[in-house]
Length: 217
Image (cartoon, rainbow, N blue to C red; front, side):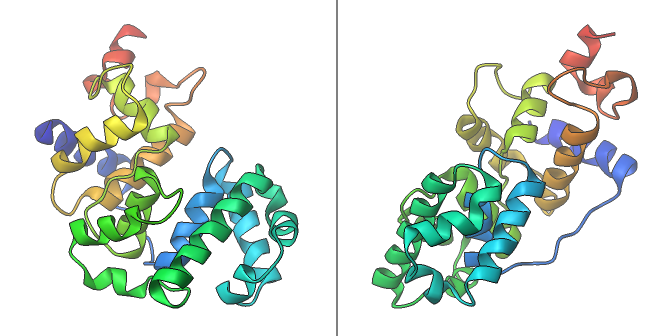
């Protein structure tokens, strides 16, 4: 598995380069990931900016009525469910940390940081991995919709493997230092080439390594 992922990473970097992402605040990243569930990146980004614009601090958001949070994030979809999750996370942080922050997460080892996130309500494996990777620089490997579709087509995980199972299988096999670039490049591939319907297999940089692409030839 490690060799296959290394080969994929090299091919994607030749095609797309080695993308970087500015390290974000852990709590901001957590809330952004909650808002990204079951919607497009464009809509989740708009919802996060609207939420930050409506409330000057996470303390102000935590003290708001649920209906106010819902109005702010409505563009992202599932506003009632997501507002409840956000308020539950903020309440848990207030009780456990004495405030609305997760900055200390960066000083912990990856396993300890993940365990700390696991205690928060509604924070599943993908959300934890996003915070660890994007906010802490830890070698986590989130499996979102795009990554899940691609790794199944590549035959890296069984077709029936769920996203959480795929994440568990892939994470320890990702080459050292490659997690961020590989994740971002796979997302780009999923948006532009390996689409859910009518994938563009003919121009895919991974086609020689892809079971699905060979069948589509």
